[in-house]
Image (cartoon, rainbow, N blue to C red; front, side, top):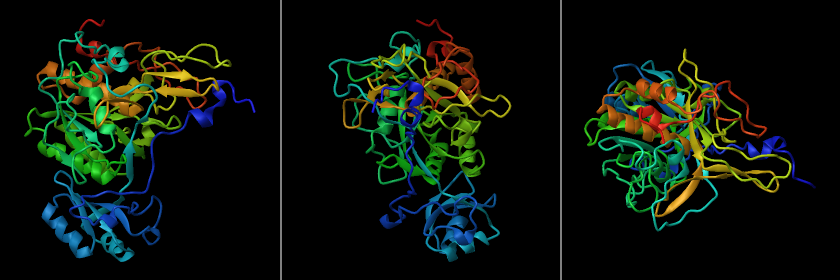
Length: 465
């Protein structure tokens, strides 16, 4: 069988989703026995309480004004197990052991809503290409493409704290400045997966003689571990991390002024209003929240959480440079600034604030192999345990933008607000109106807006190289 077909015919192969799915909900091991960590979300959408899966995990929305102490007592009285008790939300995340417990909570007038605790995952995957150690510092292609290579900008992120809401960080990684103050929804803040460390390196790998260099190499990172060592978490664990940021943003040094969330799940704007409220708490405090748009080209930003929230800067993925081709049935190459074959997109709506804020490199390039399948060459960044590794995804696009946000915070003296960050990034993008270029894959469909590619120098208002 001849599989050297035109690229447009490879939809089922090329447009695969690299968002991972599962049916797990996670909690603090100190409060929940290990056997309770695999509960699915309670109350699948559209199901009646009697049809809910139990045991299960849920988020309880209490009446406004409820105190953490009152919530502890209420959860105990109903026979549920407390998982997270939030300081900035009238809510608690619980484990429900049986239908009787669920029914009691549903009939409680002080509990306004029982929300399924949905599964969240990292928005990146391993990419091809070299990794390992390097005898000298490498400037990654994404950093070059956005105009943030060392020596080109007057700012480096010094004095700015950036929260990495992810799988944790490798605290032994000498190419990162990591605060010892951290949050974990699990047993520790260490990165057992590697995703968070890779993301952190794109944002803030030091400008030194080793590894790679990031967009804001003097920024300080804070590990906010909301995903486990396999890259999975839940709404409740992410909300707990955001709650921790709200508690500590101004008390740590340097203060946290940017948060990156390279994670997500299928969802809609209103399927968990408490999640959005947790985001709003941060943005109202002047913290810019940058998120990955998603890695399913069949969806738009409006179909992904938290990318759909108007308060965040949702980032789509593009290529940093032109790829190579061995495909005989496709003339030309996949060029720089092409929409990644996996990226979720969606035109930005000024009225609702929903949509892609900007595109940024989520892979170095896309190569066409002899069978005309696309191979993504990932962004080079830091590897947990030492050295470097490549990964592709909107997870890798998002930290480029978070790094630029950190530079803007430094430039402003810490006074810039999230909407100003968004405006500066959108209004200064390179190739507005012409990029991102269309992907040649069958799964890609133009969303109606070519928002341009992130420009660090443009956002800062300095001459671009």
